[in-house]
Amino acid sequence: DVKVTQSSRYLVKRTGEKVFLECVQDMDHENMFWYRQDPGLGLRLIYFSYDVKMKEKGDIPEGYSVSREKKERFSLILESASTNQTSMYLCASSTFRGSFSGNTIYFGEGSWLTVV
Amino acid sequence: ELKVEQNPLFLSMQEGKNYTIYCNYSTTSDRLYWYRQDPGKSLESLFVLLSNGAVKQEGRLMASLDTKARLSTLHITAAVHDLSATYFCAVGGAQKLVFGQGTRLTINP
Image 1 (cartoon, rainbow over the protein chains, first blue to last red):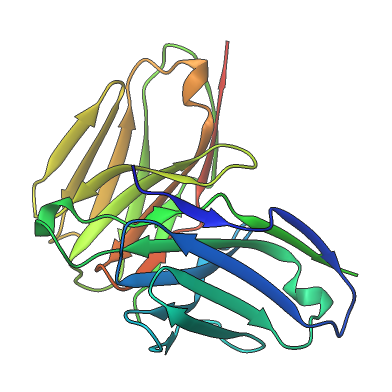
Image 2 (spheres, chains in turn blue, red; image 1 turned 180 degrees about the vertical axis):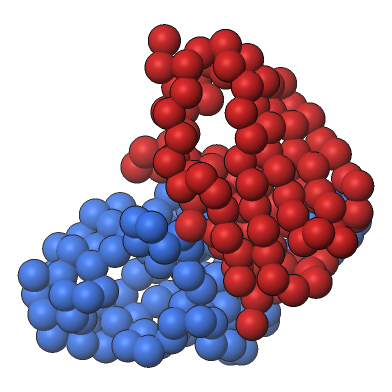
């Protein structure tokens, strides 16, 4: 089974702190994603990466950056956390390989971030 | 810009009843996904629909896709309490998905 692991499930940070959210996948997937989930808004894409050292902005990249130094690891960075970044953050991965019809996107368990 | 809308956003139903969740999207897309999310948990993939007229069924859930109408439905047959969860549809390709707002489904005994 595909496993997407987010290292921190629950974090509380102060306004202005630098925050790192780490995500690791074990299936050699090319694509990795960071979403945030807020009530009534569904999931919104922050950034995604389709290869090592490659990144693309999603729909809400402001206030975030990402790092993908290794294929299996995709980090989300909040340079200076603010209270409006309190949310649940979901990492996901997918692959181009295999049958087109079989492709899906796999999600981690989520990281609940509270900024106070 | 691709937009995805679900309705209803909240649904409370009795066990044994049937109901349908609707997912509308604004532009042509590769594929449509349905996901389930239990409280405090991650998203579990239910269905991937790839072509017009596609229908997939798993237990009491059946999903269909009408690409001409840009509409997918998730039909629940004879609901049971275990199906209480939030259901999301998502549209896009392997590199980017746009999600609907989610439908919170509560099934009462």
